[in-house]
Image (cartoon, rainbow, N blue to C red; front, side, top):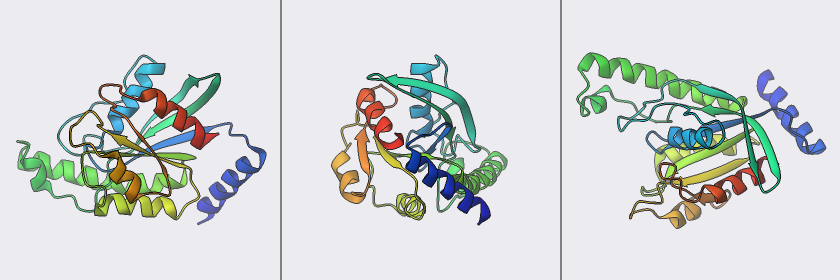
Length: 210
């Protein structure tokens, strides 16, 4: 509670003086929505290196990863931040789901255990970040229990949020459904994998943090 109040006061002071000296940008969303792919896109654009590995197997990212001092520029604006890639949020993690991807029972149980710890750690980090990118798969129904859980946790905190509707290169992509599901937040569509619409993404990013 003390940590929450301290961070709240810090964010309030930053708003009053319109100045952020050290921004922590958190990436949140369900598994396989493309959080790490988007983090990789940003890091490749501005650092020339990747943030982490991606996989079709759920919960490839199972612990918090931080890339410090990412400096970006867009239309004469500049921003430096620590990029925080978090494990995918899930309301249920079953080791048998990993076995469908030909992982052994032992490996699947280990992955499920690590993924569960990662989800808990992701929620804890919400008290540390200054702004959040919620990355959603735009080809899937946004009205899922996981998405509502994520948005609910953010709504309880005074944190700037940008919803990134990823995978707009897919035929089933429907950004409008995400906009209708969460009208309280700005939504920008991208393809993190192919780099589609990243300019609009950067413009939206500057709007929520400055």
